[in-house]
Amino acid sequence: MNSIATSYSFGLFIDGEWQETEQTLNVWNKYNQSKVGETAVSTAADVNKAVAAAKQAQGTPFSLYDRYEVLLKVAQLLRDHVEEFAEIIAKEVGKPINEARGEVGRSALTLENSAEEAKRIHGEEIPVEAAPGSENRKAFTRRYPVGVVAAITPFNVPLNLVCHKVGPAIAAGNSVVLKPAEETPLSALLLTKLFEEAGLPKGRLNVLTGEGREVGPLLTANQEINMFTFTGSPQVGEQIRREAGLRDTALELGNNSATIVHNDADVNQAAQLVAQKSFNNAGQVCISVQRVYVHRDVYEVFMEKVKEATSRIKLGDPLDSATQMGPMIAEEEAIRVEKWVNEAVAEGAVVETGGKREGVFYHPTVLSHVHADMKVCRQEVFGPVVAVQPYTNEDEVISLVNDSEYGLQAGLFTNNLALAMYAADRIHVGGLIINDTSGYRVDHMPYGGVKKSGTGKEGPRYAIEEMTEEKIVVFNL
Image (cartoon, rainbow, N blue to C red):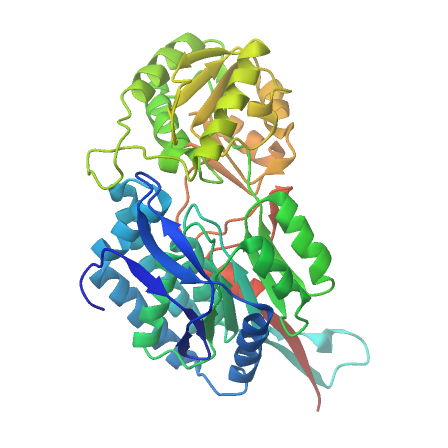
């Protein structure tokens, strides 16, 4: 790839070729609203053509080792172009440049892990001979690609979440039709150029752009797609599941993440981590801390420390390395968060710090005197707001955490091993993080939730299991 560009123009990528369309869609810098680039707008014919190319590619051999080599090469190419990708992410998302660099590094690691897992896909021996009458039989299982995978990704982590879907799908031997979010498609399209450069066989990755509400139903209507993997809202996830019918789905649908601070915890560490992981990417992360439950013994100390840490967060231009929090994805989202906070205040909540909107920015906000039925506690804010509430005992706080439609991840600060294990057994989430917040994730761990947080797991090894089918082979000897 060439050096950093100031503006990008991308067509669709179908069957190994870039294709222009009559209509285009602009991509805006979320900080200053200047134009960053433009992308093509997919039609029904484009969707059908991309799916057909993906299906045809399944007929061409693509060995495990070749998949490994391509994925590893793309990972290295990403590391060679950190600054270009980080600048695009900072502009199209509004993510601070240091966070954006971190996303690029994680994306490379996700693809590297996917490459390694491509060589580890395996089955197992099944002792069918242990059943009476089957003494002369032997059996084993093997895993096969599901076929064509439609990957639909969100705006908030536009590179790494693409890698979390495309990397394992290719490692498993599938073909992918990718639909990135219309607000932030540029990093995914630039990544596609790296796959092209790395020698990915044509048809194995096809990229469609345009409005999600237009392209999404065209994808679910195409019966040649074998699986859908989606990250986004519960409403859209439920729609995909309905329209997918009996086809496989993996859905990551958000959270209103809770973190507990017990009275034996390191309160200073807890406050610093809560302040950090409530406001990453302006709180627009599924596992951003939203609800914090603090034991009454340490509540006042925690509040002072978290307010102090939050008030120090520097807002500004995402391309400025001193900026710690950038704008939200759109002013309408900042207005929505403002309304939710004002509604909570009208219901009795107190703004401890923040609580102010300036255009597309909403200042990092800590609320107290909240209750479970407030929108800022009950729904997913997906913005820079954290609500803090005291508790008295372990069973009370576990009940408070579980009182949610969601169950992606939760955090618990404690030095009591018995409490940690007690909570691990009783808190109903996909992941419980001890002595850190709900916002902890590394990219090779199993990641996924329960309840309205969705179904299926990410993390290359676990996503490959989702994206393959197990077959048993039985010999009568």
